[in-house]
Image 1 (cartoon, one colour):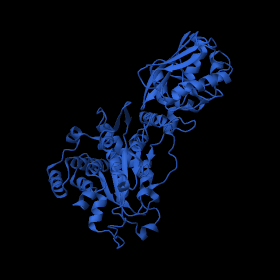
Image 2 (tube, one colour):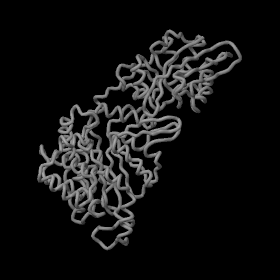
Image 3 (tube, helix red, strand yellow):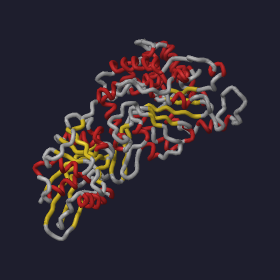
Image 4 (cartoon, one colour):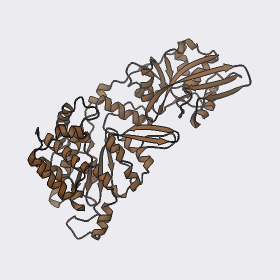
Length: 510
């Protein structure tokens, strides 16, 4: 008897529907899975057979063939177990095949028939809903996540027995539907506040500009100056995630298996801070099967690279494409995948090997050539893609003893949100551009045309600092953001002058 059951899988973060065709005929007892199944899928034969037996439905002594269509696409993971088990029950007469019309199944089976959570429940549910599936069974721990998808009835089950009883009209499972509005509109969680940071007015201003225009930034300063403390407060001043951004971020975390038990949606902008020993695969993605890396896990959030000069140079250089294009394309022998990578990069580093060069004391033991070599560990092309370079000096004692020093996170966030709203109106209808930091040359010519006085200032800066064309464009983008924060429709000289102050390394290396 031939039955057909639907499920879904992901390639990278892109989902696709899989038809599980189960054929059971007379012959020598066997159980074969075809359709390019990989290791975990092939091993699923043993899990499914044992789970069926322990649930009271041992496989009959027949020849069983399971085809996972489309058969020319590799299948990875354990999410096919439940669909294969249900297909086998329908082929052996335990379930009516007609009842399965409109249903889909997703989940890993334990040997006792229990259902365990799987990766990629949200993107899989989205693909099934788009394919016309009306009802979906998932493990209970994935129910809230899959329930985010509108137009799809999701049921969370604890075991294979729950699924069968529901399909046979016995004990009915409750439908799970996750309401997005309260998740995204709720109050911000308590977190570190900018008012707790003493001094460092210039560094705070740089982070405000970075958040307002989605500009990449680099902090340079000695140990203990507060670089990491400032970095961990950056997500708090970013605008709240939109529904679309939250869904995109959740898809990445779901595929990476980082949603947590019962998680439903990423509601706060991600903050990822990988250690400097991370590999290039760990940073941009890789492995078998290919999983997203730290850059994609920071999608629509902040990627913080502390001790930037200590990262391997080949690891840092793989950031060039995602910083420029907002996506990562990985090509391997088994195929190509595309991971989203729309991030705000914030990096921090010491100014020299000992860390104390330029701090106003005599603690530094490095000579100028050592300082130059240390700063040279970060390649020029990567620095070209970082809009803001700022020096973070040691905190003076008088600042340490002050209270109520500077604006709070809420104060800064209100200014950032207002500037972002202005940019959203400016770039309405321009695909892929939603902040000044993402402007292409076309948008720069339209919105950042410098006046004669501004052009003269820019010419002196380009000649004096040796700025590349990309650096020149980034100065204009930052100046546009500074103008937006000041409520100015045009870019004035003092806006450009402030933007040029944030090219610290261009001045130091000269």
